[in-house]
Image (cartoon, rainbow, N blue to C red):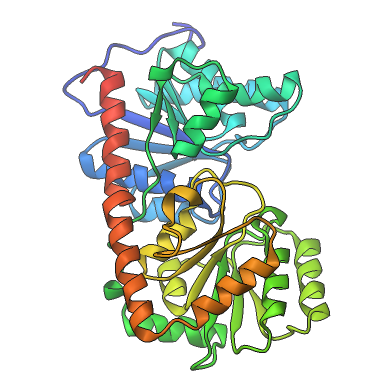
Length: 390
């Protein structure tokens, strides 16, 4: 039989389905975290999860939960590499009897789409971001994310973006908000030893409010606005931490350090790099900031922070409009507005103990009701089952 043109046998109901999730890499971020959480949920249900990516620092998390990871250059946008990935993925589909290919990014989605066509596997996508629009070729490249039998939008903001910019049958788009593990992101589950160890490793002084901006060190995260906002309240006592992978962006880190120096904040704004235990990191913070300059599809860090009972200051666009209750679980501020952000920072630092406890209670209840990871995983598995005809 020609392996290039063979088709898989009909789904054997005596075995559990196999779902292959594919994304560019596992370097730390919301897409990666959601992929791992889905893989874990599938394994717990008795299904067979597989993850394909180009690799990254989070592979060890898949190994820890016993999920197979296969490395392919699916982060490449080179059309020749993408074309070769079609055959590679088709071979994987046949070898592991994959029932569903679930693509989470554009470049791997193109290869997955044609691999699914070759093998007869089901193809679905998750639309994680409001991709920038451009000319004909740019828009056509983006449109692959709408070709799934079902298209998962991670927020109402993303669902609206899809309907406004792409020709997709309304019934094909399903909104499934991202979720966070409320067992992991739970203040009561964090042992003091973990807090003490991270505080010591990071050299955090006692008794000084910690303001944290988590996320990859990319320009889109709004670090410049954040630093300028801190400069406006530098008469207050605080330590600000930028926590997230630099991914080799040494020039950008140097630019941020120069901005810190120019604003007289040396030693008070520190870059800490990637963190493997964000629950503890958030526990160490008094205020968490999301200063993104472009709207995020969901904004996982704001939800994780609220699950830890931390007040959040976020720019008022994208998914943050759905995940933060302005004035109750945090503050929504205009994009690239250092003055308004500084006012919110001052208000958050000055919260009384009773006010802080009220925010923490409301924030955690909000997340557990609307954004628990179980809701996301159960809804996605139900979608898989619907596609498979279960």
